[in-house]
Image 1: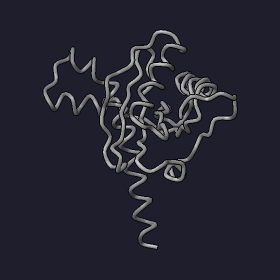
Image 2: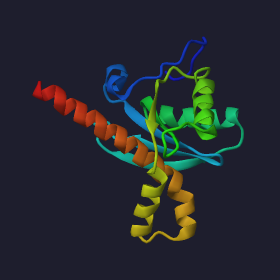
Image 3: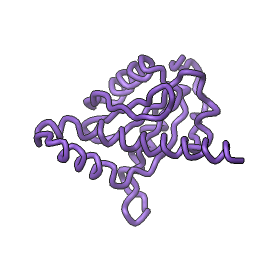
Amino acid sequence: MIAKQEVQALTVLAIDSVENVLAPGQTIAGLDLGTKTIGLAVSDRGLSFANPRPVIRRTKFTIDAQTLLAALTAENTGAVVIGLPVNMDGSEGPRVQATRAFVRNMEKLTDLPFVYWDERLSTVAAERVLIGMDVSRQKRAERIDSAAAAFILQGALDRLNSLRQQEDQE
């Protein structure tokens, strides 16, 4: 159950702890938090592939959160990877602060754990892929945030798979 009755501290996890909190068959969601939209992607149940979902158009936090939580419930999500827009020099600016504030506000509404994931260049990479697929400028604008969320999530899923392979070799 995603809804939360009592306010408790939200668990912010490192990527290597995520599989410990997932129930069998649960997915992981990826978020690209923009000022106008929230890009959303969801893993398959095998935690191998990130699949973009329609963006959530931002209005006000309570509505955005309800829409997001409904989508996460429908996808049987057990954890959320959220892109952390760190500056290229590694410093944290206003967008990082806004992302952390979003997660702090979500802690009042859900028990889902969040993982911060460095998202540098994810939007650039997503746009290059969409251009390579000959997607029109208008359609790219509609899809870029979910494509960026898929890049963020795929990076986290690849790290999880790498960690699994290391454990298998030990």
